[in-house]
Amino acid sequence: MPHRKRNQIRPGDSVRIVQKSDQRSGRLTTGIVQKLLTSSSEHPHGIKVRLEDGRVGRVKEIIKGQTPPEE
Image (cartoon, rainbow, N blue to C red; front, side):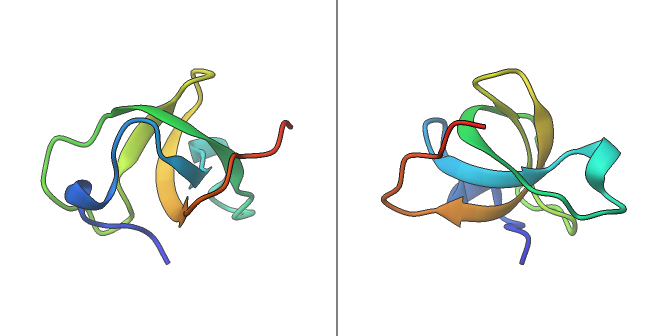
């Protein structure tokens, strides 16, 4: 389920995103939020973020209490 509300996500959160190039396959990428890129309070496809490693995508899952594994 995409996280559609901006106030649910903060820099430093561990998340799983879908990048634009992976939208068809639905492949998720795990990382830590560096910056929120969606300026509106909500978005139907999920909030767009930049991860600390520079990858950009829309948040599909928030990982609670976990450090993301190295890929």
